[in-house]
Length: 410
Image 1 (tube, one colour):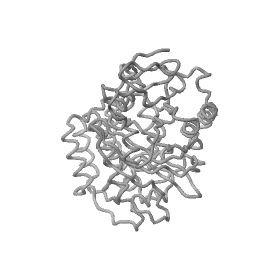
Image 2 (image 1 turned 180 degrees about the horizontal axis):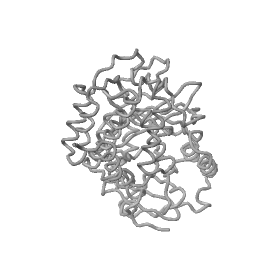
Image 3 (image 1 turned 135 degrees about the vertical axis):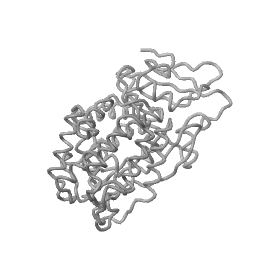
Image 4 (image 1 turned 90 degrees about the vertical axis):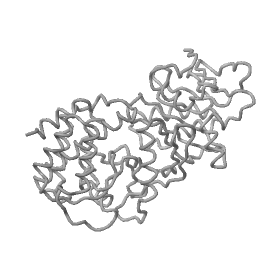
């Protein structure tokens, strides 16, 4: 299949192409093989579109056999078995230089004569900044309110050097900045606190915010029991590796002040939900601390007996201890098992009932924490929409209906 310019598409391939190759001076073409570059341009990069244009999941760099194979096989142990097998097959084809034999489409990117590639191509620019040539493997996902393009960067030997996370609108630029701030401050003393990647660099490139993060250990593996909460690690994250903090009432807490302020900015039914939460549970005491903000099995792995956690762009302070447990219960149901919001809420409540005692949560505190988390999640969803990402179809408006049932206004 031949596509004149993938940036004109409205699917994931189009969205990623616009974000990463957005400069109008670039010439892009997708076809059955390397394209003939028009006069006045020269080829700067080529990618295999895996597995096809219509079902694009991955842009595999064709800089060399070694780079192509490495970009497909790296971290394959983190993937589900079926995906792992598919990646292995593509990696073997890339290593043999045989992607063309199975008719994988090729994305050709060309720059104008007289213009340096690092001026127009993000991977080239990052290579110059880092002092070595870098090649980008690029995942493709459907357009989504909070998806950020991510470049996995390899050197000429096929060694993973960094992840580049791209903020492309107000919402995702804020997330990229938040992760950079979090990675600077996280403790690295071992114990129950998980291992985390180091921040290498943050920069702006045009209107994109870019955070460079060190790669994960090469031998990191999937969690053996992904549904089992890592309670000790969650508590270590909440307490930053220190002791428990004294509980304090919800009323007067920085957390409630933050919820109230954000709800007033968002407007609508969430204002009444926060008021109902305050009226019902204002006197209830909770321990407050930090949270990872997206504690889910696909952001966790193991390496040499240690838990590894990445993707800290939603982390924050002054949250009820146990928020990460609530998030894992809800998001695992919503995203992994495809449950609708009411059922995901039920799984959140069940996770708190099973493990809440370790967090100091009795029945009243579990109810408070569940409802406060749902308010937090709704506000995050609304803020992403206001930041230019649009509404999440999974959460809007279903989450508002759940909040109205659980926190009816007086």
